[in-house]
Amino acid sequence: MPIALTNATFISRDGASMRTGTIVVREDPAGDLEFVDRAPKGAKVIDCAGRIVTPAFAIAHHHIYSALARGMPAPPIAPKNFVEILELIWWRLDKALDLDMVRACAHAVAIDALKSGVSVIIDHHASPNAAQGSLHTIAGALDEVGVGHLLCYELSDRDGESSRDAGLQETDNYLTNHQGLVGLHASFTVSDSLLKSAIDLAHTHDTGLHIHVAEDQADQDHCLENYDCRVIERLRAAGALESSKTILAHCIHLDNNEREIIAGSSAWLSQQSESNQNNAVGALDARAFPDKVMIGTDGMHSDALGAARTAYMMAQREEGGMSPQEAHNRLRSVHRYLKTNQFAGASDNDLVVLNYNPPTPITTDNWPAHMMYGLSRAHVESVIARGKLVLDHGRCALVDEDKLLAGCQREAMRLWEKL
Image (cartoon, rainbow, N blue to C red; front, side, top):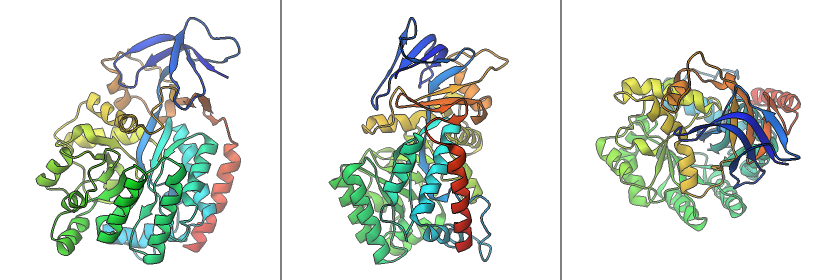
C-alpha cells in the first residue's frame, strides 16, 4: 500500500530545495518519492500540515552491542587510561554477551534509532564468545523493527586464535548473503596475518574494511614500536585504504603525513565527538579531508542529529570553525557513502516527519542552521523506511515496542549479573 503525505513541506537531502504538496512513497528497497496532485486511491494518508518532511538520518559508526550498558555495574577498578577503559569495561562486556543479549541490544538500538529519525545504521559488532550467528541475529532484529543496516564483525587477535577464527568465519558466512563490511578492531590488536586475512576477505566479497584508527595515542605508540611506522602508513602499505567502501573510525591522533594519505585515498571517515570526549582521547581535525567525514555515535546513543550538533560545536574550537551548512553536509555524507558504493540504504523513500514549528521562517538558506540550533529528536514524529511506515506518531509501527523493551531489561539484568 502506498503512503501519501499530504500538505507536506519537503526539504531535500542536500537542503537545496523546498516544496509543499502531496508526496507519495511506495514500498520498494530502491524506491523514490513522487509529488502528486492528490492522494491515490487506496493509499495510507498521513496529514503533514505544519510538519517538515525530509530524508531520514543514518549513523556511520555504531556499537549496537553496548546497548545494555546504560547503568551497568562499575568495573572492578577505575580505569586510568583509554586502553584500561577497553580492558576493564568494553572487553569485559563484549565477552559476556550471548545471542539473546545481542538480539536485545539490536532491538533496543533499532527502537531508539527510529525515535531519533534514523533509518539506517552502519554497525561495528563484537561478541567474542558468541560470534557465530551474531551478525545474522542483529540483522534479523533490525529488520523486524524496520531499520536498515550495514554490519560487520570486529576481528581482533586480542582473545586468541579460536576467537579470531570464529569472527572470520561469521564474517565470511554473513557476507555470502548480505551486504556488509569486514570489521577490524584497531591496529594495536590486529596482527599482520589478520590484517591480510581481512583484506583478502573484503576482496572476496567485493567490500571494504571498517576499523578504528588512532582513537588514542596508544594505537600509534604500539604501531611505531612493533611495525616502525604509523597506523595510516601501516594500513596503506597493506592495501587497506584502496576501497571506497572502507570506513576509518575516529582518526584523532594523526600527523600531517597521515592526513595527506587519507585525503588522497579512497577511504571514508566516521566522527564520534561525544564518545571521544567521554573517553578523553581528543578530537578529530578533519580540515585535510572535510568531504570524507561522516557522523557516527560509537554506541553512545542512536541520535545522528544530536551527534552532528556536537561535532558542529566542537569544530568551532578544534577545526577552526564550521558553518551550519558544512555540519549539515557532514551529517548527510553517510548517504553519499552508501550511494557511491551502491549499498542499500540511500533510497529516497526513507523519510522522517518532523513536528517542528519554529518562531522563525525556514528557508533553504537557513535550514542547516535550524538543524544545528533548533531541531532535536524530540521533533521526530514518524519515520518511513524503504516506503514502509515504521514509526507512527512516536510509536514503532511493526513491533510491540513495550514488549521488546521489557525483554531488553531482562537481558540487561542477565548481562549485569555476569559482570
